[in-house]
Amino acid sequence: MSEAESLNKTYRALGNAPVADGEGKSVVLRRTFAAEVTDAWKACTDKEQLAQWFSEVDGDFRQGGSFQVKDNAGGEVLHFEAPITLKTTWALGPGMTTELELRFTPEGENTTLELEHSTPAAILDEMVAAYGPGGTIGVAVGWDLTLHMLGKHLSGEAFDPVTWESTDEAKEYAKSASEAWGEVVQKAWGTSDEDIAAAVAFANSHFAPDEE
Image 1: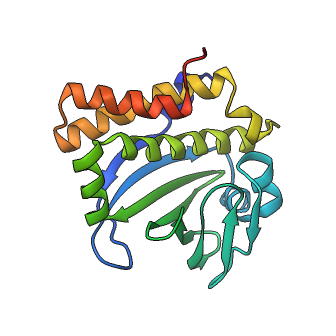
Image 2: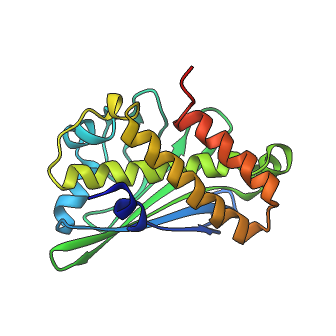
């Protein structure tokens, strides 16, 4: 599958999913994979499979369990209903606890996965007011890359998720995803062309930095 085909398979939107503390604002991604729901679920909850395409993860994905992604976020499992729903907290550090929900819908031999990552609305509003929408686009692009990697894994492709992020394929996909999310954010929030361009450039500086 080409980069363009993979990019076009993903639905992108902004939502308003609440968090435990109240109102939230979210990024929403939805994609259909050529895999049965049990296989898609296992790819996202089995630690051995996660290490093959996402990252090393410690802990347990079960109701009331907790987990830690290597060099990334950790959290607690809020809702676990195999193979349909996984909802967790997603904390990068003190004072910044967000929530992540994966919703799996079986469609014959295929599975549609909807991913929604919600941040407390007050915190997000403060960040956008101070720094623009670059952070939101950056978070969304990170999940976009994650679904792309999941698709590669479910298609049977073997790769190292750590080194893959530095490949030309990953960087080009990230740039295209940044542009796509820039359009979503601008349409939803009415952000100016100048501010969107700066936000997309901010996301690209993280996922696809220029080589010196």
